[in-house]
Length: 107
Ligand code: SF4
Image: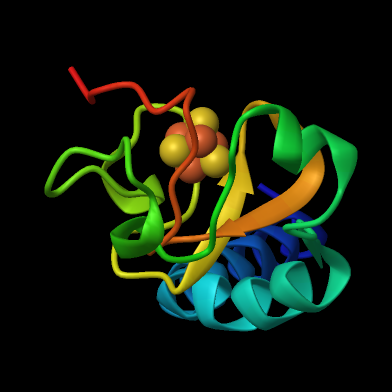
């Protein structure tokens, strides 16, 4: 094996090890960037009104106890997040404490 190949392999191994070491930090770097890019769903918007969306499930008359966006099957925010994407509102985020009439139980 040539010296150039050994250096190349050594460089590759260093980069893999560095990448593996930095991988746990990726969500911490990615999360603020994602949150800054996403827009919070406006409660007064037509699509929110269509499903009676509220940012606080406690104010929703039809919400069952414990049913919030955070416990909804359509919520895509990370566990413990304050807000996150919802499958029925592409490009928007909803409050984890929110609720709407499309709430579905997680399986
Ligand atoms: Fe919240 Fe679920 Fe309604 Fe989306 S579908 S707004 S996550 S309750």
